[in-house]
Image (cartoon, one colour):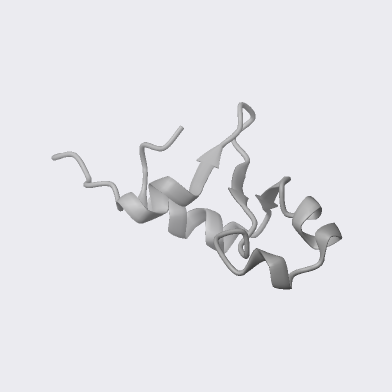
Length: 67
């Protein structure tokens, strides 16, 4: 079987932990940050664990080789 091409946008947004969980950064940190509450921005620094199996399957299909 040939290799599967990695969807680069997906590979940049998601990564796997050592135990295999799927994590991503929160949205809303790119621009227009001065209009958001400071507490919100502090909260968005943490990684977000993606717990749904459907999202896990979709990311695995798009980017099968991510760490």
